[in-house]
Length: 156
Length: 290
Image (tube, helix red, strand yellow):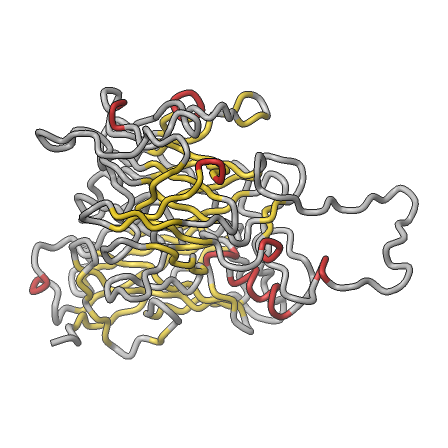
């Protein structure tokens, strides 16, 4: 959708489909884990626990990418207890397209994915160290950045 | 893979609306002009409707934010889609609770009675669905994993309720325009089976006082396409649409089954007999275009 919007507002080349974000050849493939539902926000050591709109608790996770074509890329998120390595979240998956990411000058950002905890109470994870992994497969390219942060409740 | 979402918005002054320089319209031998966009009647149909909600997964037992409506351009020319209206029709889907009686207005052959109405933004030529292309309208334009297998983060439009504090505005999906919304924090179609109509742009809507809820009505001849879903095979008395608009109905096997209904395709032809019971079939897993 950003594709058509940018085409519609910024240029006159009629797009004939979702905007294919070709990898920027001058940039090495890179992938950074962040947070945010509206825009990519770097993680500053903490991830906020959020009550889901239909129950459950999750953290919002996001990606910032350069040098990677998102079209058809397979994305798998999961979270582990940083101390034990035990998976503590459900696995979140997505098949990306040019329509489902936000274009940036150097690549794209993916926002709005949720990492939902397999817990009965938020107390089970508040204060815990969570290791988030994002496994991305795009053609022959495979990347799996990881990030460890403390799960916190920022809303009293 | 089915036809992918292929459409675009023409900004004012761009593309086909821009006067061409002298001689620009002269075609080299052997090349033909691209077809001009045409109106949606007879060309734009409901391809798939997913309303039932997801089976328990990912920590959610009754997940419904993954609902979507997908439209398809069945013609071989681009179709003008800006300004189209889409709405769900008033009435129970069946005898959900003991004592429920049919309450819809299917006996009025002249009008359809709408509980909610949304509009695709823009002038007709600002949203164009190419030949064979689709238009995906989402309840919430986000990735619903792990609570559902449906990822709507690449949808074309979503129903965002600006006045709600619980509806999230997806940055990757444009918003439908709210025309008539009767409550709740998002456009939730009944998971028991909604009836959805697609209306001509510019359709004059009239208010109708149902008593406990304010409806809008539209002339039946303004309906471009419709799909009628009810609770189960025994719910025919609860039909909401007059037979002139839709002669039948379709249903899934239950709520929160993850099933959708999709228009049948016979060879290369989409079936459109104005009878949802004949035109639609049940899908075990929704298949929105990516």
